[in-house]
Length: 270
Length: 196
Image (cartoon, rainbow over all chains, first blue to last red; front, side, top):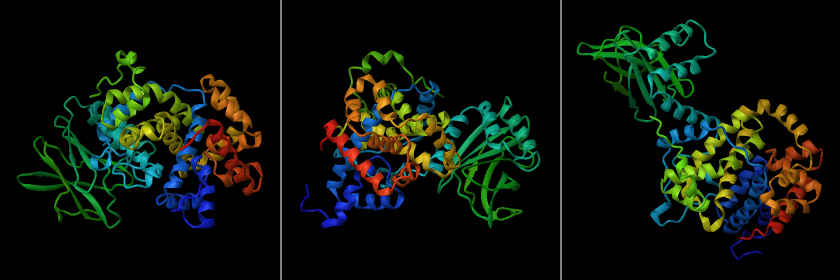
């Protein structure tokens, strides 16, 4: 079964022997990497993988089906809006190769790093959760579990955040951040309070921080700083929120600045 | 704004469209087709993911991620090269195994593996196959494998173990495990008549 375009001799044969284990997902990491590298340039190996994968999938098909919880489908469909679909390359209708699918430059599915996927999942859940201010309460509870009472994200702040989210007049607006991420401002004129929820913002490191600003005709007044550790962050803004005020975010040297020293990465009008 | 995505009124039409057609339509952004595909295949996907991960909560997460990835990458599916179910299960298996191997999961791994040891007898592949009457072909093929081959296949596919992990678990030389896996898969492939 050795084609003319095969790798010469024993190395190819040896790789080929890894195919069944690869299809089972049982290769140890070094072998897997080596195999996937070879896969890119060998149609024969790809065909082999396909055949063995069909056999492996039959092991899956032989299992008794198990109905997932009913809510799972609704949760899934709520995520579709934020999950762009790949199109067949070149419009020729020819599907992209999926042999080493996650390794390819897929726009939406890079290597399946579980942490990253979990982060993305959280982010999408966040987007859905934010669709109602009342539901924000749940988010807040989920995000800050395990923190102290004091501090900008402590239990005290959490309670305020919950109160804000529950405010009958709570409103919110979101803005995309160029370079990645989205920020959502939640505010209540009645309570004179606002909070920012950031998702997917890059960590600006120890030397810098994000700073929040209340902006009106008279200029910008600092409303506190926050840092992103992980995928999500939220912060109650310091100072009194007044209706019509805009809220801006800049990147400042660690510790914050008395007035903005950089262009805002996002401004949200209220 | 959660639209009513579960439309049971469409159920009758489900059977008229094959899973392959539904997956192809999904690639074109057809949510109705995707909804039907989900209804038809989610129990298989969840059953597999749950078997690999054991933990129900993680299995639910991964199952959702599997279908999200299916939605996003359905364009890669080529009905000429295989069945939609196999495509989905391949994706599901990869994600489940990734999760098993993630650093996050590794902490509980020993515990889970221990549980699996108790729950999963050597012949478990064949056992599971017997339950699924509609897959007589598979169970028949599995019965043709040696118990040692079945054991290795089960640890790899359902246990998410790598070859060296299997060797350690069974206290066998790595070469023996490699041979059993390879021979078992080749035999299975022959028995199932999978060709390319």
